[in-house]
View: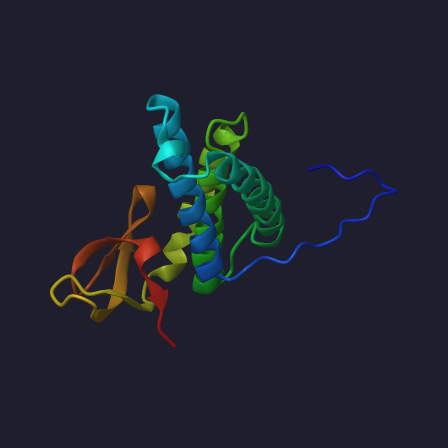
Length: 168
């Protein structure tokens, strides 16, 4: 976004990682409902309020895209593991929010850039859902990062960065 010399940039609040994930999940679920309704008309008779879903998608995707753009300014070059994780979460939400829009190519590039910063997680302790105990949590140390946002931890091998939270 280019700002003319006479314009001032009004910062937009960037929500927590948890809220960003909730927004992305709601958008993804709504996009799937819209696709299903498009491919199989009649979902409205099945109890889905498709006009309300479409209106919510429009409103939420605009909100997500706005705070994501703000985050890209703020986290252009993450300097900590927490910033890198937050930036990657925001980029993923942007990717979801740009579904079937011309901005999708920008979202893919932004996601790749933020995933490159995930190397800041190496050596950090993270908590993620246990693979052996339903509802449990596992804590491990990040050993390496890979393309597409995968990370390797000492406890379970390769996991997705979306699953983990930093441990203090």
